[in-house]
Amino acid sequence: MTSPHDTSDAVADTLTGGPPRGRVRTGFGRGVPLPLLVPALVGLAFLVLPLTALLVRTPWHSLPGQLTSPEVWQALKLSLVCATAATAVSLVIGVPLAWLLARVEFPGRGLVRALVTLPLVLPPVVGGVALLMALGRNGVVGKWLDSWFGVTLPFTTAGVVVAEAFVAMPFLVISVEGTLRAADPRYEEAATTLGASRFTAFRRVTLPLIAPGVAAGAVLAWARALGEFGATITFAGNFPGRTQTMPLAVYLALQSDPEAAIALSLVLLVVSVAVLAGLRDRWMTAS
Image (cartoon, rainbow, N blue to C red; front, side, top):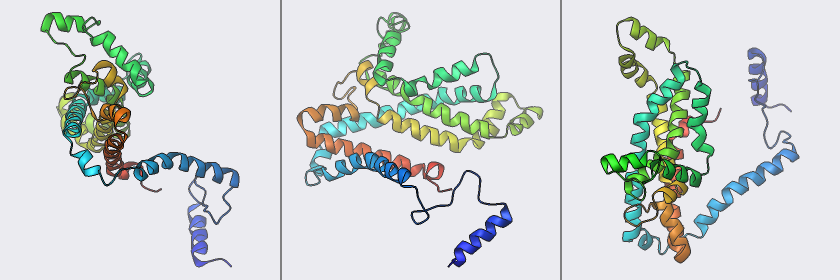
């Protein structure tokens, strides 16, 4: 027997020309193919099981003591400061770069976009080595920074910020560029025809329009910077109080104090969940 709900759905599909293209109305009770259901559940378990195991093995009884130790607070404070500074650097130079890629036609734009997104797929350790070759004391640019200005970036807190910005900024650029491409450029053009400069049009018209995309990209960049490990340890080292961020503290604690490593990992997990919850309207809405 057909339920009233099914009948109303059928009538709605008839009036609108059928269900939306690319979407199949199905459910566990509507003939889900077993060859798709089984690997889907295996994939879900593969992703969820390690996180569940982390929660199960968390030493809840000693967790307050672990999280209030001076070493943890030192690493957490350094992580928050460096991730925030790296996000600020990414905003200052990443938003203009995203605007350039989205609004300006120039030869080699595809190559530039590929280079911008390269840190997303580049192994972080390789990124750290590349930073050393560029900004190290004997690097291509670093030797001039050292001899002219006395600035040395490797194995310093500033080096942590540089390493985190290098791996995190592509997330911001991609998010902002996508938002700019979705935004109507005619508003910006109308502002320029009324006498505003291109920069004024961007600052007064375009930037408010793309603010949600900029905010989402900044959150993603901040979360990526907070969890950065490979480039940081290669370029900045692992010195407590100076370059030892939370991921590095987790790695170090895992070798001598697994319970502390689990506690630190739980903090980073909570931060990641909070970031995902903050972006739920962007990625987690059902459609």
